[in-house]
Length: 215
Image 1: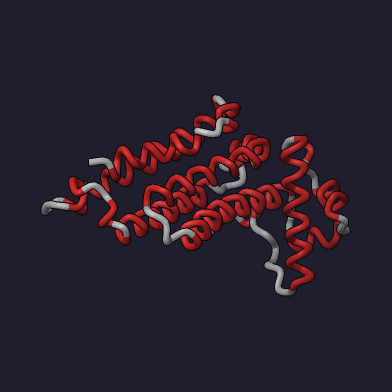
Image 2: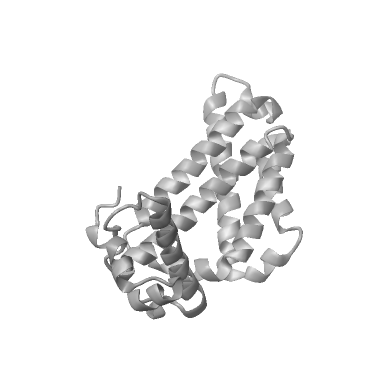
């Protein structure tokens, strides 16, 4: 729970119509942020783009900061939902294929949301969502770890045999996940043109293969 009231919504929407309004306000904020930057995000402008009255906006969002925080929360939630859905829908695939598919999907998603995320990331501390980012990373790590535990038979025996197998597996999983994450995040900032390379997702998944599957 975020404990900064000035960045929290005033209330949660309870009906379909109000949820649609809140979604429209958050989407309008994201569009302005992506195309014009945070300085151009104002409550009046957001309400105008969303086709809502300023009074309706203030029923849910007290200020600009709460709108920006809602965009960050939405994007983090989408990342988690993307990973969970892809893993569930492709659970029948071999582990290496599943991880490659996930890596390619994450790269494709990063490419499509690159401009928004470039504008969004520097705001995380300003709107007090660093803890939420940390919790989302931990949640993603837990999903990844659960996947590996369920598919141990497909991992390299060097990670699953011996009295210290749990520690070896945890160490390898940490390295594989962080290396893939850091490589993707570095490309977003330092070399975004690489995200257009067809092989980028495949190369990310090879990190996993080298650490987790190859003998």
